[in-house]
Length: 289
Image (cartoon, rainbow, N blue to C red):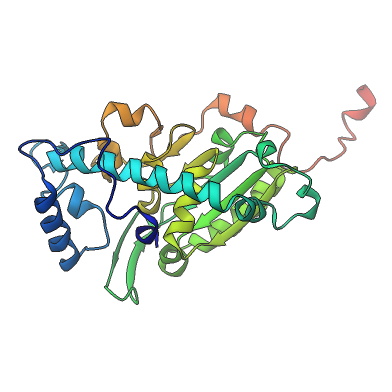
């Protein structure tokens, strides 16, 4: 898991403990209590011990724990990603190219990698992960053409195991995207995989050139660790669905949270025109040409 790759102890030098919020003993106690609670695997307990919504206004109400802990999470994930690239560069290159021998001549600097992350928009699982309620809400296929450029050399569809096992239509959507991307990006290497290791999934999302995420909890932490070309779709009305929509402006400058559900506009047609479908002879029109 990603936890085994984080520095021990976590690096906090870039953002010191703030007065009247958390100190090291208080953070240790908070983490211990969260791990012993019913939702010990999620970040919400540490980031928002008292929740992140103002019940009176149904708006964001971020406490000091969020502003204290989130920079640590971001900086430590970035450090792990940098180390991952420097130590497994050859293996990372092999991952992106393993399905197409004709791409083996490419150097890493020639690659432009895009990742689509599919995970549950929300999940409620037991401690053993044997039963789980997973709400999967996919995006229309055309949305991805808006954010993944034609210059992409590799497009990877990363599916969380919870979504693959419990999400209604999750695996089917991944397979559908695999074939859709094959038509949309004919010169790119397209892969789709169920990634059981959070460290592997996180590193691929953080180090990719482009990241696109339908509503899903598995994408949130990698998204805030990135610098650019990140698109995270989340519901903001009539209620805020996840804490990423509450991010301070300096975080939102690094990623885009488009409106959801996505609405197709007339100018979006340019991203699809002549890229999908098949050519057929128009015998009625041909004589006039």
